[in-house]
Amino acid sequence: MRKNIILCGVGGQGIVLTSKLLAAAAMAKGIPVMSAETIGMAQKGGSVFSFLRMGEELYSPMFPKGTADLLIGFEPAEAVRMLPYLKPEGTAVLNTHPIQPVTATLGGGAYDAAAMIAYLQKHAGNLTMLDGDAACRKIGSPKVLNMVMLGAVLRSGVLPLTLEEVTETMERTVKPQFRELNRKALHIEE
Image 1 (cartoon, rainbow, N blue to C red):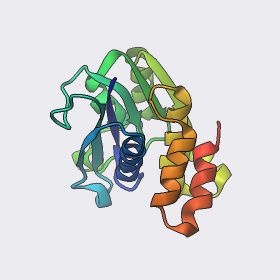
Image 2 (cartoon, rainbow, N blue to C red):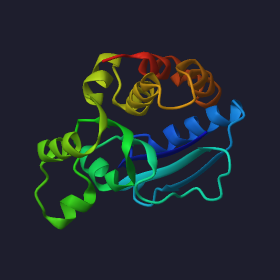
Image 3 (tube, helix red, strand yellow):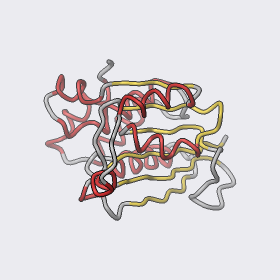
Image 4 (tube, one colour):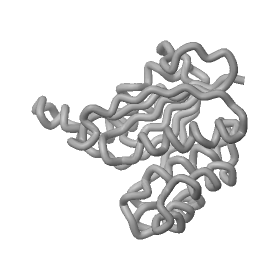
């Protein structure tokens, strides 16, 4: 068993924590893991992505285009940008709420979220879409998008991890005052 996963979005969406939780849950289950992140512009709303690999015979945290089993897109434009990494039969889980990346703002170009979503619907074979912003409003905090996304990914069954295993890892990882909020977000179903 080997799973290649790419997580992408913009700074502040919790991508790095999501990657670390998946890695920690896999390691707790005895599954080898390798990961690499690009977080240089994370605090400025810039592009953030993480490569995560689980399974046997891993020699590098990075993987070539067309080989990701799972793409977790926290933002539509960033998901489009990373879509070439997803294999044709791969699974994509997308937050449909757009956040214009700093790079788009600086470039002065138009940002059309509907066009990005339409592109993903056409080109990402197995696509699950959710309104992460609406789910966060139900929970009462915009800071749990990563857990909402992670819960949706785990319910898809594409990973060798259960919602319970990741919940246990989250409870060991996050500060006590945030555990209940994160638990609600992991278990919310849109």
